Length: 211
Image (cartoon, rainbow, N blue to C red; front, side, top):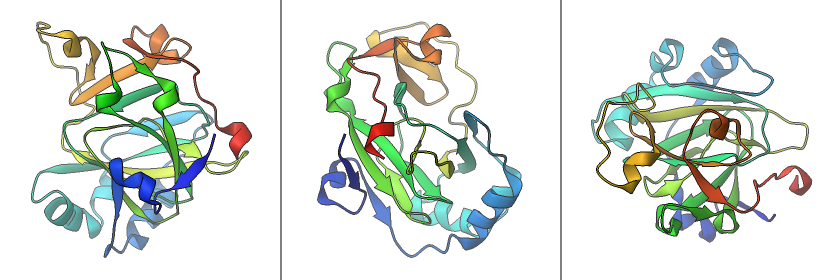
């Protein structure tokens, strides 16, 4: 699978790199205060990350004053497994280089997405990468075959919290997995075994051989 850069023109459909931010204090806290699991670990809100100076800049500049949360996704991964989207952009900032596997919401047809639509993009350590609300994404991947990742995840406050109690009104409601989180799982993923909506067809992409 070809791995593009988030600096390439091909990424423009999916997101953009935000300039002007000093991420050093934030990434130092990510490095020192968050664990590196064997698999993949995600925590949506972490006090040691949210007390850094950049919190206010991201909330007021990047999100226009909307309340935000800063958490992390750390670990080791080379597989797609699932794709999710939110009603708002997500910002990713890596301590190390990392790879995002992404697709577009409008690639979903009749509740499913063919994984042949998925593209891979590498972000450099320290880049502030905005992933648009209409971009499907999931856990980051290693940028090296035997590598690791530690990635700051910035989202509107409450995202990935408790699943709201709803009466499904349409097909999209079947994919609601948590607060502000709509998810399509591949049948071979652990999430599918946990009753996530199976909405990915085709190969469960593994970029290990591309690294």
